[in-house]
Length: 341
Image (cartoon, rainbow, N blue to C red; front, side):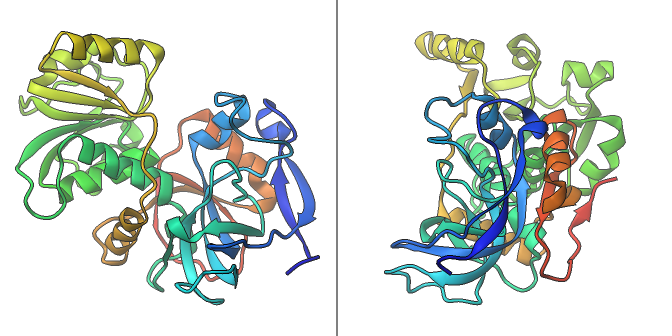
């Protein structure tokens, strides 16, 4: 598709938020060795996308400006690069684009075959695009906490904070598949939703019970998947089992310091910051199969056209989305994931 142009959304420098996004016409990229060119059907916005824009990873990311953001996409293969034998034009796929190159807020994007998987017809583009960062993060966090998904896992108790968020909503469902008793926190408006996702106990985080994180059934937590901010170790500690661990997905410098102290003092109760997750193709394929089989459901907060990308970006930055925020490029009949609310 050399020489063709496409519509895309980019930003020219750090900062600016949604107002810093610009609609442009740029060249359609060409796939290189072990890459495929996708016609993007849907993309999902994650916190890391706008945090990179804010400069939290400067000077590493983005490597240059202007930059087309967003990594999580679903679409159709239209061209393959050299050495690609596992995909062909017409294949429907789910992919996670390279952070440094990104490109998801565009009509076409180049994806590595190393983190691209087939998308069966039972899964819509919106469902597929919801998966990579959010579901992979939830899966890895639970595994880091000792959860197994091969049927050999022992029963245990897990607390999931911000359980109606993108990561949290997947974590609840995956924890149940891992044979765990799930206590979850969320806002009052999402209590019923989180129960439908499988949580055994749900706490409104604004109530005294929710603020204390105490299990209504008196359980102590073997694992905490911490998906939000503003909760101190002193709140977690009395609710943990003797060898309980908090997997912190939103670590601060203080989190890292306390984690080191815990290790140096051989504390039984541990705090584990999780900053980088592994991009594993087999894990992504596993998650796609779970959605196909109806064992995991995607929760969609809202859908936006590419022309409305700024509104989607702003909504993500507000931090109160229930599930995933989707940007759709059009081109396929909508299939219905669970819509919040």
